[in-house]
Image: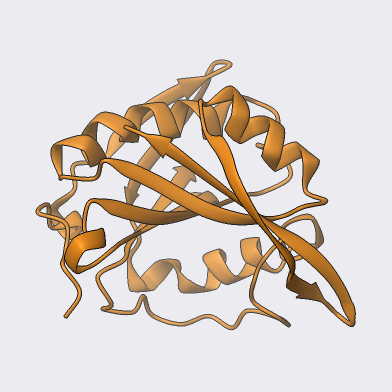
Length: 175
């Protein structure tokens, strides 16, 4: 059985962020976000790096213990973040994923959102964050390094895009 984080993110208090004079809100994903979230994930600059093959269809968030957050600007979903807690002896770890639309990439929004969420996750018992990324996603690798993530392993050919294999690079950060 999967351990859930202590905090019920459905009651997660929205976080207000300001980046380069632009106002954003980080909040829990809701069923009404499905269409905008799918559209963001299907942008070519995002979909290229996803582990999911093919187009994403709008759907309600699963009830699987994962915490899904939207980053919103003026009622439009411009970013997504997800955290999936481990279970048992791995319950202090959480896998994560992020996706931001092309207009917000490089603005510092993702960095600011992560930094705002680190203490919240720490309070919820998360000690380590981890993810696997495509080895050719150099932008993501630099981004995670700047946030203090460390690369700890590579699974040769662990990811596939079309018929081409790529190494999966694993990163982690102690909170």
